[in-house]
Image 1 (cartoon, rainbow, N blue to C red):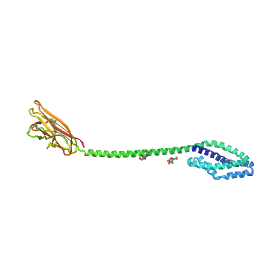
Image 2: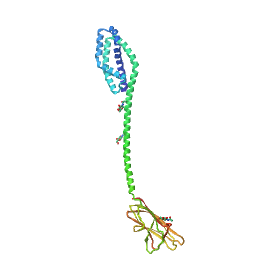
Image 3: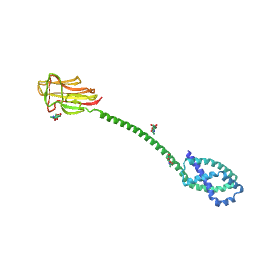
Image 4: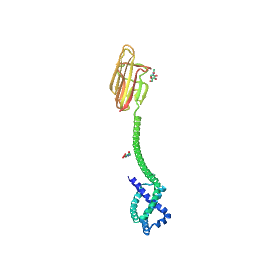
Length: 318
Ligand SMILES: *[C@@H]1O[C@H](CO)[C@@H](O)[C@H](O)[C@H]1NC(C)=O
Ligand SMILES: *[C@@H]1O[C@H](CO)[C@@H](O)[C@H](O)[C@H]1NC(C)=O
Ligand SMILES: *[C@@H]1O[C@H](CO)[C@@H](O)[C@H](O)[C@H]1NC(C)=O
C-alpha cells in the first residue's frame, strides 16, 4: 500500500520537478515573450512563488539527478524523503494555486509550458518508475533472501550442533564398548583325554586330567589338575563326550561345580563301544571350579583318535 502511495508521490514530485525544470530550461527564449504578457504584480508573485521554498527545489533537483543518473537506488530512505517533500510541496502548491487565481492570464501561459513538460515527463516517467520499482523490489527480495538465508543457516547450525553432540556421545559409547570388549576375558578350551587307552576302574573317584589340547584361550583349564577355574563372573557353556570300549565295565563320568555334583552320565553295553555325552550352561562366580570325575568302579577310554573330550567357553560376563 505504502509502496503504491510512494510511487504516486514520486510521480507528483516528478511532474512538479519537470515543470520547474522545463521552465528553467526554456527560460532563455521564453522569457521575453513571457515578460510581454505579464504585469508587474505577476512578476512579484512569480518571485514569491520561487521564494516559497527554494531549498525544496534544490533537494528535489538533487534527488532527481541522482535517480536519473542511477547513482543511488531508491530505497526506503529516499521514499521517506519523498514523503516529507510531498507534504511540503502540497503546501506550496496551495500557494501556487492562490497565485494562479490571482493571475489567470499568466497561469494560462504557464499552462503551455506545463503541457510541454508533461509530454516530456510521460516519455520519461515509466522508465523512472520502473527503476524505482525495481530498486524497491530488489531491496525487498534481498531482505527476504537474507532473512531466509539467516534462518536456514541458524537451522543448519542447530542441526549440526545436535549431530555433533550425538556424534560425540556415539564416540564415547564406541570407546566404552571397545574398552568393555578389550577387558572382556577370552575364555575357551577344548581338550581330549589321553593317548593311553583305558583308564580305570578304580576304587575311588578320580578327577580326569584332559591332556591333549585343541585350544585353551585364557588358560582357564589346567591339564595338570584337570580343573577349570572361572576367571570372571559369567555364563559358561560346557560339554563333554566320553567313550569306553570295555564290555564288562560301566562308563560313568560326573560333572562337578566346586564340590557339588552337577550330573552323572553313565552307561553299559554287552557289545561294542559305549558313549555318553552332554552339555550344560552354568552361571559361575569368579573363581568357581568345574571338572569331570571318573566314578568309582567305572572305566573310560581314549587313544590317538580323541574319542573322549571336554570343552567349554564363556558365553558372556554378568
Ligand atoms: C542485501 O542484504 C544484506 C544483508 O541484509 C546487506 O548486507 C546487503 O548490503 C544488501 N545488498 C543490497 C544490494 O542491498
Ligand atoms: C536453534 O536452537 C535453539 C536452541 O536449541 C532454539 O531455541 C531455536 O528455536 C533453534 N532454531 C532453529 C531455527 O531451529
Ligand atoms: C588328536 O588331537 C591332537 C591334539 O590334541 C592332535 O594332535 C591329533 O592329531 C589328534 N588325533 C587325530 C587322529 O586326529
